Length: 117
Image (cartoon, rainbow, N blue to C red; front, side, top):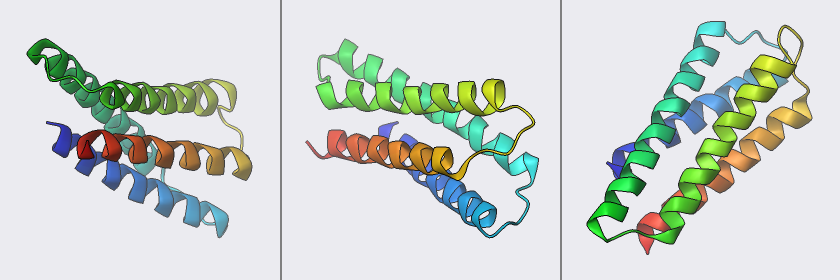
């Protein structure tokens, strides 16, 4: 389950990078892609939380799995609050988009580390 979550998370990151590059070039990002980006982020966060709980129940839990689950969930929750609630209908500042991507990359790195140890 964790490997499938990692694969989906990497695909989400690639789609997010493509959206950022389009935005940086001044091109329009279709709203459907943005919605799917968010939907799959929610799916990954749920997969990660379920796998963390199941590893805890089995007794094979890893502290880094919990840290990565919290980081991915916080990236998703922060993006929801920021992009949907606070900046609804407005152009998103590039700095915030970059920070979102950097924090997401840190989350992915932490998740990969949790799988490696």
